[in-house]
Amino acid sequence: MPHIRTGLLLAAGASRRFGPEDKLLALVAGQPLLSHAAAAMRAAVLDRRIAVVSSAGTAALLDGFEVIRIAQGEQSDSLRAGLAAAGAPDCLLIALGDMPLVTAALLDRIVAACTDDQPSASREPNGPPMPPACFPASWLPRLAELSGDQGAGRLLRDLPASQMVEAFGQLPDIDTPEALRRLFR
Image 1 (tube, rainbow, N blue to C red):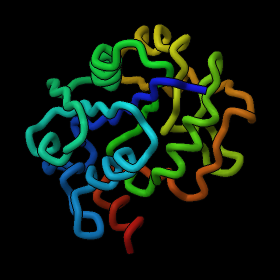
Image 2 (cartoon, rainbow, N blue to C red):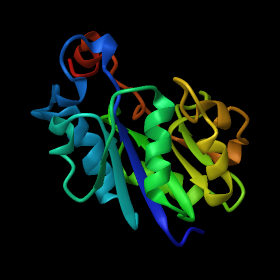
Image 3 (tube, rainbow, N blue to C red):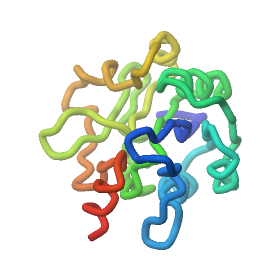
């Protein structure tokens, strides 16, 4: 379906629940947490890759991405910054920097499920839609209208089952040191 496929990696959160450290720099299997999400997006079939970050440490991990640096703020701030940088792609794949188990194959399946008039999203079996998600150009204005500390989740709530891509254990996100320990015991 899409001709210009742009990937947007959101990595500008404040990591408040993680403690004083930047969770995206915490080591997971010997590499910073963010490196896992970035590697998956680099390996996915995309025409452009954009990352929105709030620190020089995370920016340094993003070779191959157009890096947009913003001040830490609310989720919608990083989403709008990424949308502005993306311009007018045929579809926009949105992934989060704190989801280390997402694979390039999953990202490619999500992009393939996106249609001209319907986004696609990942989910655990029978679970709610979650990021990563892909939005067609016709939905980008809806993303731009989001405000506050909310991401695109509310736009995905009512997606039909045909637009869901089963992820089978790839969707844990890391918000706390305990979540990181639990995931990689």
